[in-house]
Image (cartoon, rainbow, N blue to C red; front, side, top):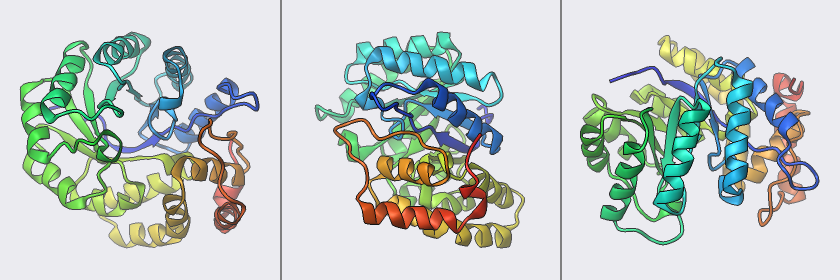
Length: 300
């Protein structure tokens, strides 16, 4: 099994201009912010990127922009899940041709599916491409939880299913993925505040929306853990945890954008129907950003 994908992956936010359109110039700067911060990969059209509020044309254009701006410096993971198998296959084939390194595939998130329907969808999408696939377990949105044993069985059946992003926030489940099925699939935890625990447990890494805000800080903690320096990792984690907790405790997408704005890197408002944070929460996040000097220096 390939182990090329590991570490901190930024679930890129999508900057929007005042007219609500994708702000391509700021998106390119946001990619550079993460790459310059040392992340190990960037994710286009994930949940943090508000993919569900975009058209298929926008999703394709956004991915092409991210691949172009990344320019091979780090892998690009393309989230290509959709409401229909047909659209997911089309988006996945486009992502492969556009230069994505890995596909991430969430199950349809409106009509509740059975496990059998979900697995058929995932197999069909994976079979339609040649590049590695990352399963995206997001039970809060899809209504289906992919159990560790189901994931392990699927990875053994389908050669190019090599990764999973588990966003169940259940470390017991993540631990089973890591220890029972680590021979066939690499686990990324998709719950930012579990980075320290997950990587210590043996996860391949974390996919984090907060890496838009503090890429270098999360990378430093990950590197310390990989080097066996738990003391340094814990000290650095304690420093950023108040901001991490504030973001994770608020509506996530608006919180990421508020935190970016506080760093001096405005990425626009969320696309409606999402709204910005209330004034008190925005002020709290801004104050916590200002307590971390490197963050408040802004982006490129």
